[in-house]
Image 1 (cartoon, rainbow, N blue to C red):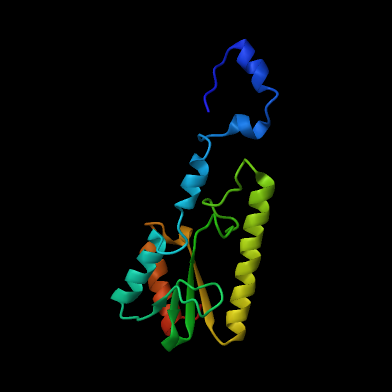
Image 2: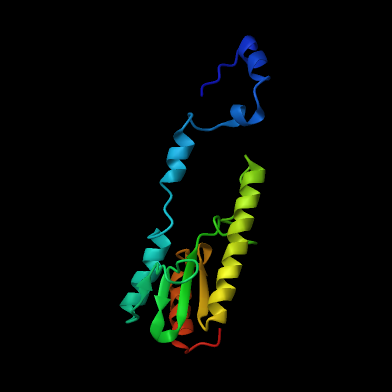
Amino acid sequence: MRWVYVASERKRSSSRSLREREEKYERGTRSYTMSHIRGKDTSIEVLVRSYLFRHGLRFRKNDKRYPGHPDVVLPKYRTIVFVNGCFWHAHEHCPKYSMPKSNIEFWTAKLLRNKTRDAAQHAELEAAGWRVIVVWECELVKANREARLEQLVQQITGTCDK
């Protein structure tokens, strides 16, 4: 959508809705862009899985038999690991999470549903005897990555109290 800043255009555009005026993409481009955001095999998931594999841990990935299709399932340790993106799972007090400025009602409801669903799935897995570990995207920044992944291995193998 192009905006020409002449008096007649400005007057005409004021009658359009606020959402139309603030649209950043051409019609249909946002939908196309959002459709290419994948729910599995994200870069942070691949990073965590490759680290675990290098440290001798064998696992199943995205196993559909469990609630929430966990990113990593380690049956030997009765442990499930979720690798969560801070935005999509509404990680509170995180610099990578912020509420979008447009379509606020939709995003608030969606992110709240995601958070509620995550909590229910974790509770269900814990009730079934699984240990659930959540690794957040912000914990995997380069400065903290090695320490967090080492802590994850220790949490899985039981050599850590956390």
